[in-house]
Image (cartoon, rainbow, N blue to C red; front, side, top):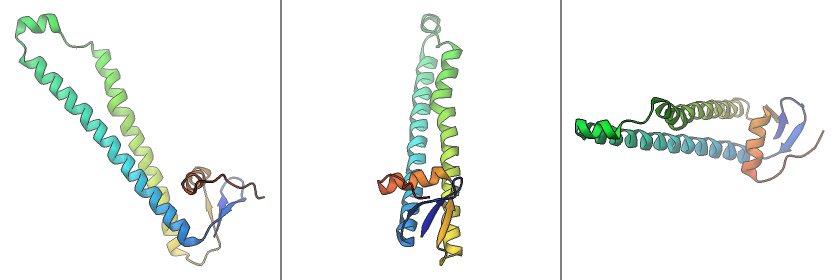
Length: 138
């Protein structure tokens, strides 16, 4: 099967169909593992914040006066770094998974197709998965 770059309309590489399907499936699995890792990191952060809040609530009013909470802008930055950005990354990964699943459906619907046209970012992911540089065939 020829893998054709969507923008340049050139063959990026040739690969047997069954190998191509295997690579796409492994990319999907790896992306799902990435999502699970990100969700675990978010859960760790939320657990840490709950522990900090519990500790703060357990302090006497006198100690609360001197301990204080971190300024709200620090909390907002922490939330952005540990929660909001990772959630955004999860959404991007889910979109990539949907694109890869669309490719698998396309192969399933047209099993005897000689070529498949893919966006460049998917071609680069497949190339990295295969462990080689894209060809310069025109």
